[in-house]
Length: 431
Image 1 (cartoon, rainbow, N blue to C red):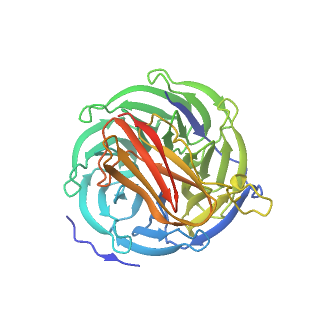
Image 2 (tube, helix red, strand yellow):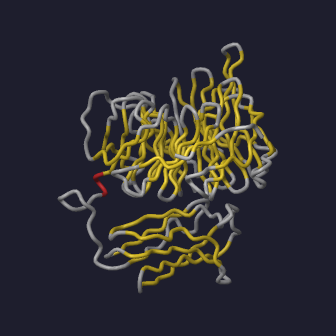
Image 3 (tube, rainbow, N blue to C red):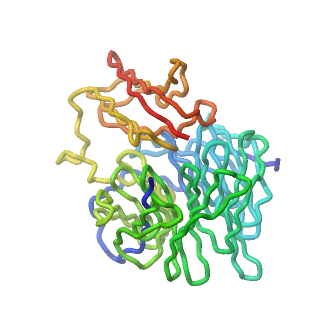
């Protein structure tokens, strides 16, 4: 491991494209901002944002969205391009087009993150990284005499202190992003004058195989994410990939390119376009997506993550912006409505793989504990255990236990205890 220092401070695809310059912000509000030099990528877990920047991993307490505070930092030595979080670890992709590394950082203590493992034999730059079970999937791109190539790298992280490469899929193109759901990896890349989505079967990690693709003419930058029965890629094409070998376009919002990152929450897609800003798109009707919100930071935006009503935007000049989706604010005074009673909603999707969303409501401030149990009644993981003000909340579970390992297929129970209120729902996890 290198010596480093740290400082304590059935699916459907939607592909997203460019927007019009100079439009006004609408249906959005800036709630908070914190400066991070060279912000490039952002992930959200619990009450913290994890940001990859020019010099390392920054950990930001977002429990008060109007006043985010940087609380921890780890210097990676190389430029950090990407970050994702699973359990108590952050996986940070570093390097340049000539070579890079994957750092595994223990974030169980946000004030003092520690590197526990590193894979430093990546041929090029990791332009995207995803975690599913015991594997990291990285979109890798490198340049040889200005000829770009790339592919999908698969790393076994079952022992975080000793990550090992187990598979690689070479697609001979500029590879831009990666998402994984079930037995498929979804990769966006550029092949000559054609860009597209490539679907790779990773059920056998040491022998990944391409099973389908959807190609589009023209150059673009793209990012892909998958949630429930939909996948979303930069631009706004909507592609049915229920048959992975034969994806079909079912909807289109526009074309133009420039989309850098995309994520989804509920019926909204959030996409950032590098020199344009944050767009919010209603995809409740996949055949007719509609832009319903916009926010321009005024600088170069590179990534977005979403939790609840807030979009967390990585701005290369200004750092982290916390932007509220005002369409999710119900009262006229722009404050969230206060629920009339305690509720714990059924999780969605259900059954699920790899992630499900759990919603609950509090009519008053309470100590809230949200815990997952297996069918034998043994505790699997505590998703939340802190004091919450009245309001509506949304928590995601990625199917991992408290140690970061994926659970087995089966029935699980989620129980909320808030003051004298207690309720349980049944969930089904499929691997």
